[in-house]
Image (cartoon, rainbow, N blue to C red):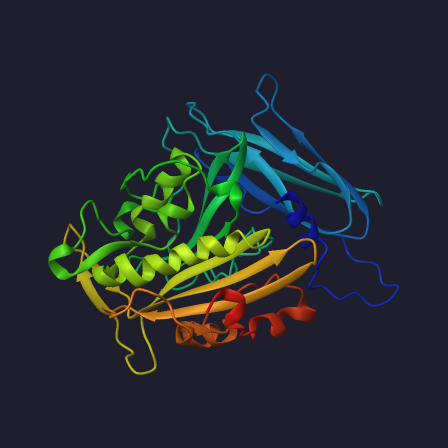
Length: 383
């Protein structure tokens, strides 16, 4: 996984004229984070060498670390890791990036405290220029945080390291995640049994989420996972996070338990044929033939959007050949008289982009992105 990050950091969307020096730029992300947030990213654009130093208040423990703390050139996945702040006071760290040409960038990161309740209210409708800070992750689509959409990432601990579990773009107006994105490889697979830890997502205000402590069997819907429980069974926390209400949709029961479940199993199988499989799953709320959104009620009577269809887009990466391959699945949210995916369920990623209005895998190298997104080779995917 580390090697993948290093490879991705080599690709830059910035085209610099021959002989022209790149201007030093540093993006530190948000300057205020919740008490339970445990990670964020720094992005650097430069031709120079650089180092990063952290300065804590006298007597304060070193609750934050940076990796790497030195390097050369542009890098988009410099990781800040910090512990949960269970204390009574918020805390801060001063961060300085110093370049070999002498230029410095200073920044202060403040973390809220749990005891004083000084966690800022998440903004369900951020300004359009509130850019996402983790664009180095290959699985993320282009993230649009307008129109009541929140961007959320969940982290988990695996092998003593704090790693990303999955991310989502959550539509607060319709109480549904418009997409859920995650990497899939052997690191996330283990022997943890299904936890059934149904709960509100701690990173989204409860008033925006569906209340789903029980499902909708009387209406023919299951609480359908977008990131499957079965794809996150390395440990208890990794699995429990998949049971957040923000990850659920009103999925036709017979579809969820048969054809969709089979597709999820096939996706896990694909991950064993590559170094990392990047997955984006989401609902389709409107189509060209049906522009209105359908709703059902959650357990408290709140309206929750019912998907008309679902998609999955998949991107394989193999380190040995530095090669990518991609495909998309598309299913209507309805009963099927079969339980196995067939070739007609497959679409190119470019076609799924047109159906959904989303842009997938924007971090693919420019020179191959169109070719990869227009791949349609069912035999590579067992169909």
